[in-house]
Length: 218
Image (cartoon, rainbow, N blue to C red; front, side, top):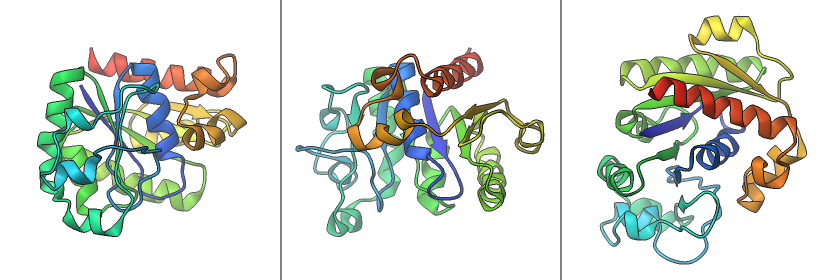
């Protein structure tokens, strides 16, 4: 299974959601934001190298963390050399080796967002109660539908409870994830909420979001 995590607007918690879903689903997290990578990388080949033909996708996966990560490079030169058209094959190779892949797609609606969705079996849309974020989420949903990436669920970040209006507008189950320290610290530390604060509401909500994805995949 390849799961794309996308959101039309930056700053809505997309990478945090992808990191936590990858941990909950025992999946490899692929940071596919070629120009604005957020997932900690460390040393070794990265997605820029893979998409430039310098490394194999499976060899670039870091297995030591929870979750395992295929990071993206952070240099402008690396981004320029990367060929986004290779992403579909790279994701397929990681899926063949590890079975489950979560793709942190770029923010916005650029062409490289579509490539991640094109490769995906399902998608999770990330938004917040902010009006602009919701408007962009609707556009991202349209792109996911156009590319036949089934919408498994909506991560409604920085919200205390789900909204029936959001569910009806986006056409998928909504899981509200309140703002909290485990969510804020996840990307900086590279560790999911279930590891940082397993008894927290944030960890429980990401667990519920992963359950929605499993239901969609069955």
